[in-house]
Structures are given as C-alpha cells and as structure tokens.
Image (cartoon, rainbow, N blue to C red):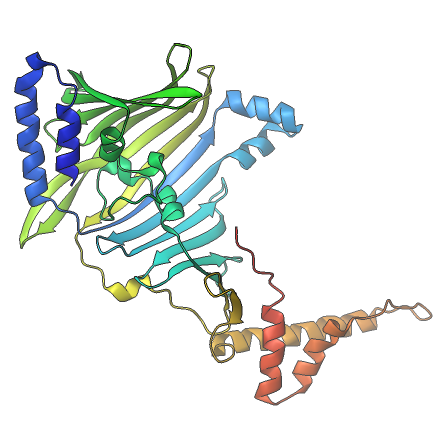
Length: 395
C-alpha cells in the first residue's frame, strides 16, 4: 500500500525530462513493498515542547503572570507508547509531565477487536484504580496521539475516514492532495534526497507542504516544511519546519528473513505564527521501535481491577467493576477508615468548651459505621461509597 500510493504521487506531475529518477525510486519502492510489509508496529518515544522567549513574553503580559510561571504553564513533556496491528487492534499510553518531569496524568486508549477502551488515571501513585470508559469510537483520538507514525514512516492500521487528514500517513496526504509534484533532487548534509511537494486548498487559505526523502536510506524523511497562504495570492509563510537530527535503524522480521530499515529517530519541529515568529519548539526522541513482533491479542484488552468505575457510553450504564473491591482496595479503604477515625478523634480533642460545632452530614458517619461493622457486606458498601467520591469525567 505504501509503495503503490507513494509511487503514484511521485509519478504524478513529473516533467518528461525527469524520467530517469523515477525508475530508481520505483525499484526502491518495489523492494520496500516486497520485503517490508508492516503487520505490527510498537514504539515508545518522548516529546518535549518548549515555548520560545518571544512567545513567553507575549503570554506573560496577557496573563499578568511571571515569565517562569508562564513557561511552566506552556511547556509540556510527554512519554508515549503504542502498539498497533493490521488486524485493527491498537493500544497506547500517554503520560503527561510538567517541566520538572513529574507525572500529571496518564491515559490509555485501546481497541481489542470488540470494545473501545479509555482508562484515565486521576492519581498517578497507583493507589486508586482508573476511571474506565467504553466508547463507540476511538480511532481518531488514538491517531492524533500517535501521529509520529507519519514522520517515522511505518504503520499497521489501514486508512479510515475517522482519522483527521493531518494525522494520516504522509503518502496518503500526498495522494489525496489537490496537487502534487516532484521537484529537483537536493542534497541535505551529504544525502541526496527526493523532494516532494503537495497542495491543499480551503475557502480561507492554501497549504503547501514539502518533504525531503533520503534516496539511499529507504526514503526515510530528512526534512519537512509546512507553509500557509491566503486566498488572494498571498506570499507563502512558513508555519512549521521539521529537521531530522538523527536516524535510527530497525530490524524487520518478514517471511523468516530479517532486513534493516532506517527511520527518523530524533527530530526537532519548530512552529511559527503567521508573522514568521517562532513560538514553540518540539523535540521528538524515539526510544524504541519494533516492527512485526507479533504481540498477543490479549495485550489489547485492559486488565480492570475489581472496584474500578466503568462508564459504558455504548449501553449508557455506569457500574463498579467486579464483585466488590479487590483485596488491595479493601486494605486501602480499611487504612483510610482507620485514618479517618484518628482524624475525627483529634478534632474532638481540640474542641473548645462552649463552642458549637456545625452540623455533620450523614456521609461523615459512613467511615465510623463501616469501621464498626465486621460484616464483609457492610464494608463493601462503605468501599463503594468511597470509590464513588471520585466523580467520573469524560473529556
């Protein structure tokens, strides 16, 4: 699929005097199509997004915050892992961190062939189970979170209308563009590159994108530039530029054979406003990439702990999963009940004679009731009440 569509894109718009180049590219793509079918891809990588000083100054004045506070608010750090198979199954984990590297949130997206799952961890100390959501569709958010695939050049899932155009593989974007062309070959840091350009138009603006592909290293991406122009023949303004700073190499298992393929392992994506001012710099580092490793299908079904909240958007139901809380959660609740008892006792000791305490709601007595009851059934009720204090949300 990769070879066919990209070959069509390279052939379309080629000037007759460029025919010799097309034959070389055709042979490379044919070899890729024959030996490097991607039945599965697994990858983990990191994204560091840092605002420029120019952008920090603007946002600091607008928000009336200090530059340090603005920098901390705008900067982000993500650790992403994903696995997908050509059967349609996928799984991803996104951990968002602050500038110091402390985790802020953790989200898992998955489709196991039957259900679309989202797991959202409210607290990252692994003390509480996540809120679990079963959705009708999930392909689009998964693709948006793993859009690095279009840069590294590998994917296993087939194309879908659910996926936003900008998140689709580059060869599909080229193939489906309003116009595409092959420019003269260029050398980047000693590497001879095929230069491919394509255009997409809307009522408001036109977009021009250009990529440089290394001819000797299985057409791995070397550079990418995104430009924007208005509808009145305005000049092209660069809004994004991606430069590959390091290539990686992965071994592919295919038909009991192994072959080596190159891909962008580290790259920097600079973002600009319409006045050509740099506003953000995103650095990507691929830590691990494996092709066709044949992950077991059971991996894509989340392991849900008894006592977790499960919100089923398909059936319109919300339940506490399992037959009561897990042993781990029972111990956690018992610890919290004991802790609540101690805190209430401390409050009683600090009461001032003659002072009136505000009325205590019924829920304040629940830990006392649960603590005083030895029956497992009543403890389970208390556990369920505590678990439901976490208001499930679906954003």
